[in-house]
Image 1 (cartoon, one colour):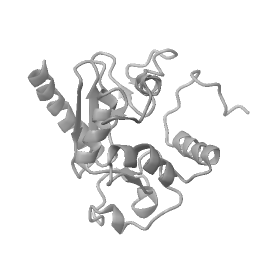
Image 2 (cartoon, helix red, strand yellow):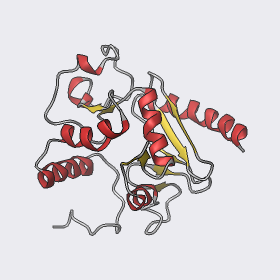
Image 3 (cartoon, rainbow, N blue to C red):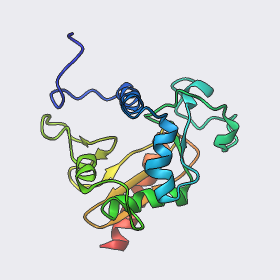
Amino acid sequence: DAETVPPDTEFRYGGGQWQVAGAVAEAASGRSWAELVHDVYVEPCGLDSLGFNNHFTRFRPGGFEYPADFDGKPTSMPPTLNPNMEGGAYITAPDYARVLLMHLRGGRCGATQVLSPTALATLHADRTGAVYNSPTGYGMGWWIDRSTGRLTDPGAYGAVPWRDLEAGIGAYLVIEADATTGLLLAGQLETLVTAATR
């Protein structure tokens, strides 16, 4: 149909593709998304805080300010069989640091190979760069600054992780606000981190 295009021929940003990818992973494996996340990331990397929920069904739909009625504890949200794949992950800052290190250490958590080097290369590649003349690149869930090579993935409520693969650093700014404030602060923090590590 007219809405379907071949891979790498058109850039359409949105969350629907992640829901489809999650459903495909569940169907192909015969396991739930929670079981897959546990086996691939939680257990080998010791990420006890990592999980998925669907904040869009719990809080204001489409809201991009930190929900005033959320107490900060994911366990206070009712469990769901339909987690939001695009933005429904939750994790503590120390556990997210382990995820960033895994990306910087060739896909390894300790002695365990969590992601293959090929998978990492695919995740880190500028998928839009091969087709579009867009000012900012996009990979598998990561925005790519073509001038610096940094990868970033800002959250709706202000959290901003980024990786500088060339410099071998990863950082994670965590605030309870909104995406605009998070990006502003992350830009200032990136400048300081870059100056301190170069």
